[in-house]
Length: 574
Picture 1 (tube, rainbow, N blue to C red):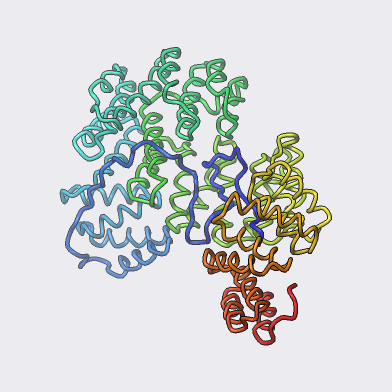
Picture 2: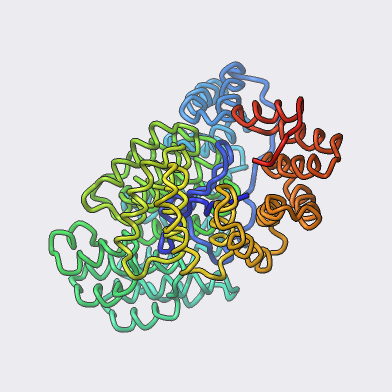
């Protein structure tokens, strides 16, 4: 059977864009708005207050809130928890659940009330200090900021205390580097200190030293993109256009490209420049840690960090995009879409938010909405290669190969001489699916020529030729090469076995088809091929057994054909 190259992100795609064309089925979402990170998982589990069961107050509202939260209905859950907490402000069980759901929903007024209730009972969650610090940073309340940092220093989130104290010192006109010198010596703390020191050097005008301190921290990973963005915004704030351009000389991701343009455009520079402050530093740090944690299962600390980042700096759209990704993975898709809608079109992260919206809709089974949104992106005059790729992939996924064909062709034309075997394979496969074989064959042959050792290309062309009974000898050679390169692949084993069976080499074909069926027992096409092989070998009972197995998992059109085989057998291979 053919293994069509699955629609996949182009080679240069930024996982923060949030589109994975090979994404799992709805309700199993994986949004890649986050970067693989340092050992932020070393952060300890937050204190979760325990208390007696909720026995007072508005029990109906409490139960409705729990049900809504479990269903991802964030707004409804928050509203009901607010009612339950108002009816029983001293109930710790209600307060902690209200706090967690309020943080998830971004209702920080309710989160503050619930946190205050828990604090009065001596069971305040450790991460509440992050929200308090963010509020103090935003309002310029230096006393409250100091108190929140002190709470962090004595609690489970102490590794954040020194960087935050450094930014607070900058706000008050003190020496921001002194708190960094007193930071813990463990590896995670040291990393955060190094990152903070580099940004503070730039913020205090020591640009050359800051660039030197930043350089060892930068690589090709996505964390490095966030460092570059933060440093570039500070440089723009100081009017350092040339230094900004040098820092962003490499990298084509949307935020980097937009900041690079801002280095020579005063209007853009003013839009994206950052003023060094505790609010900026805290928002960056919280987003930095959350982006590390967001690769795992959605957890309460991730939500608190992202909401605190947005409280400190409401324009932090990197945090907003990450939050949408976490919400989507937590089955709160509608709320995630609303979060993405809050990203303005002029934002550094607007392209990522737009493509993330397409992904969310597609993965939630809203195909028409996803396709409409993808068309807007792909048809725009300045549509990126990534956007065109996503639109083409989505058309294939939705059974619209005719619409995918010109898009894949457009990608090949854009790539020019750099177009590789995968580009041609996707184009050829789309033509094949669109029943344009005369055009598909040369495209697939080009894929094989460019990728002579690529099993996917060899297998697709070989199987396609067998199905059309064209150049069977050449097809068998292609499939034998694919099998030699990838001997454990069930799809390739099936393709080769089927080619051998069609050519009358049943003794060689049968073991391959049996091995393929064992390797992929849920594949209807492989099971049908095995049944055909058994029938031609005179093993009628086993043939009907294999066809029946195929019938259980086949689509409607194939089921009709399989029913006929089960009832009457076959006269010849087709």
